[in-house]
Amino acid sequence: MQIEIRLSSFYSLGDERRFFKALEDIAAIKHVQGVGRGLLIDIDLRYLSEDALLDMIALFWRYGVVLAPLQALATRKRFAWLSDEQAYWHKSMFETSLAE
Image (tube, rainbow, N blue to C red):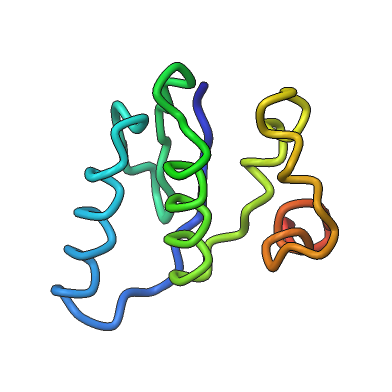
């Protein structure tokens, strides 16, 4: 699965390094490619555990990345928990006005 995200600004070179190191530490992320102010991220769903997905959501949340590209995962039975309306990420993931 490939997603495209838009990046917000980093506050320092170290901040940017920590973001990319955290992406690298998620085993399901196989490739990251910069495209303008965004990233194309290749995710191997075979390795995307609940914990890994929660790490990705938390990382994106911390860096102000809109979560709408992850919305497609909620249609998969093993990730149905993403649709929990009480979850902190729900608005960013499912309200399309935030993604525009």
